[in-house]
Length: 306
Image: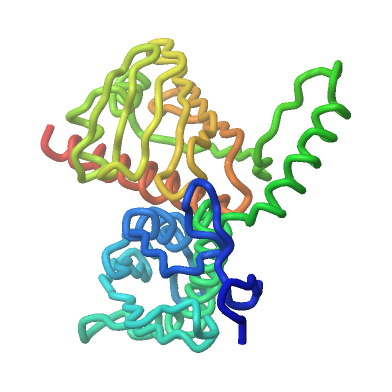
């Protein structure tokens, strides 16, 4: 036991001039709610599992709520994580999958097996980020450590003196996508579906914000897709900065839409660069199912009502 007036590093908290909490000796509380919601949305929303029966995708973060899709029919389900703690092994985390009785039971079983595995992987990534990102600055160095870091910093500065500035950042592995789709409509009508707010809201079945001009912003699918128009050539081409909410912060892909008129139809050519590798399948699903198929459905309704 340390004697009164004698410093024992095992027991005595080292004094600092700034009076801060060294090595987290005193209990530190910090609200992680907002940060956790953002990180859990980043890691969980967009998870996809599929087999010959269909596809399951987590589409929204509440507790965690998603949509299960089977042969064109949608079945809402719920994934609930009643208790998540960094003190426990993530493989032991309870993940409950439920849905209303009826169709979709096969996909419920898929989500319980492969889906649960992917959810736990995502939770593991969240817990790592909690320890490495959120706690930055909570555990402060002692005076000795501070002095050592100062010396290292000075050595580092001397080493780089006279050299060119170095750009620091995180490199995100990306892929490029190319997709084509034929639509039974004139090029003018298809172009308007991507640039007229009312039509965007109809095919996306959600509120949208649209400023269809160079530098104009857009927001679709309840804010899950956002971006900016970079180039618009009427009835010919649209180029956009484009991102999903669950992508790494401030990371955008470049999406180019080329409208090619053909007899009685319009061919839409999509070229996309900068899609995070881990979101490639998500991106394909988003454009194929949530854009192309929904637009075709809207065109059919327009034809019938006309």
